[in-house]
Length: 607
Image (cartoon, rainbow, N blue to C red):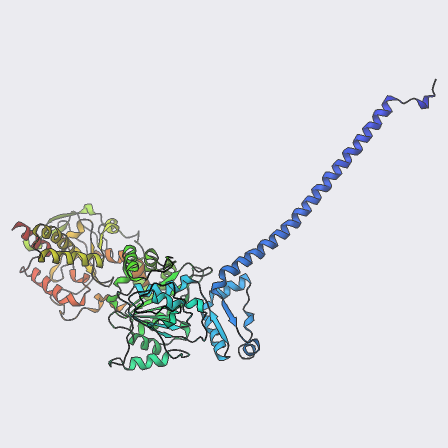
């Protein structure tokens, strides 16, 4: 027999195997724990590294994207630092870049002045959409831009955009920089008639571009030019494009520019810095617009360009003559047609315009709401801000079911009229729910209608004359004319309000409170309150043009059941050249000696 100590008991063997398995299990668990710890550490490490890398890439992307908006300097550091301070303090970090771009207009001017004083060189470059917006907005708002002046820092890009217009015959440049990169003034791709331009690549060698002696500013030239306004030596421009710091401008210089523009249709377009924002209700161009009003510009419009990366840039278009702004209000289709007719093609068959087109121009016609908020902070604008920025829900609206159309109480010559079916309260609008559906005839549409009526009449087409003449009579008889869009446009009620007659001798009970009548009106002078040109800059009118046309009328007193509702047609007259004719027509109708337009047409149809 073997000793007991030599015998392996089954239990001890199993226990040993269990210990071995437990040891392996513990090792695996420790390895897993260590792996999890290490994985977490690596995740944290890679998170930090990736965050740093992403931040770096974002900063790099932001630098690349904002590079066209920045100022690239080629200067003598010692000279600039001694005379101007260190320009390298302009940081390229994302936060400081935001501040830089936000104030880029003033910053450029200060740096440019600094470099000029130190005989250093600086080059300012902006993205192409900036130049397209600055140039083509003013050019397309003019019916035939032939003579153009460009004032301010010139890169060649503004000149190239101007020379794309086939109507341009003469461009006068005023700029203060010494060097212009050749690629920025390359016009070789523009399909310009050889009669106007040689086969040179440089826009500055186009015979239409005349470079004047470079002044630190063009004040001297424009002062001399405006002094010869009545003489043959004076030059007149159709469009003046300004790309300078507006903070350096004063009324005297702007007046000289105004006097150098064509008095019948001259346009000034300028970049005026960054646009106001909802966080900062400050219009940085307000002083400039006040100067424009003071110096005689009759119509001023502001708009912004949302394509800027950090803050939208703001622009101003100013018209010397109020009635010359018709092309500013053209439709997208009309603008597209004009661009097709006016813009030279590119030899490479690439688009001549990369950003500017008809819909873009139409978007500029309605300024951003922030401009209105800034405008309405002035208490002097309370009337239009309260009247036209929306319908007041607290005002009682009289529904159209409370009125009826019958033959007018004024007699046969007045045709039909409106009558109250119940007592109508005072200070209440009628049929306000239908104002948004009113007909609107644009100036160019009315011009087509009138020219068609004239052509049909000259050619004796009787049937066509009856039809097109009926359309003209409907608009003229039931519509209200206005010059808010420059040339004559019309607004016609879509419901039965169009049958409301004129209240003779001050009997009007609907509309505005006015003491003006057809009998006391001076036929030689348009009353000041009817003159729409006395407000060159009115952002509320620009934003709510249709509401200005179609609302604002109220019952002037309580109107009893069965009474006819009258308005004062003179309150809707705003055309100086037709004022005398309108007053005399109403006098004849009120005296029973003349018929209204609709009555005349109906009598003609019966014959």
